[in-house]
Length: 165
Image (tube, rainbow, N blue to C red; front, side, top):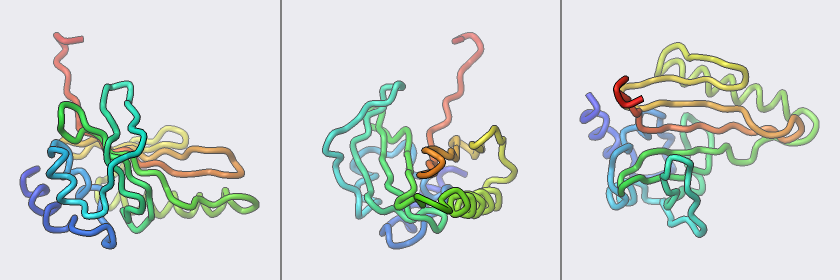
């Protein structure tokens, strides 16, 4: 099933001008740096790469990635030369008076879109998460009340055997 997503992702991810789905983005997980760069025409090297606590290094970014019909800045994190995680931060979030209402509308639209693709979410406060095949998908509401934002994280699912705990 994941291989069919890879094929669909390879066919649909030619340009960031097209709105990609979370599932199409998830299809990139596990690809090499070169494969991802070839699949995302707008991918650029990160000027100051940052490392996650997992050890993954954010070395590519897409300045304006359209995903689920919203504009995000996308950072791609690699572990052992394979794509392990994508962080998408909403571009131009609302600010000032009315910011909360505007962000609530965008968040509701994203939740509806993600539910349609991934099914019901596990919700906790200002976040929601899903498990889809080999990927974990999380939607977070972040920022101050007068300058809220949304963040989507898509990461490779890590299954751990109980004996490894």
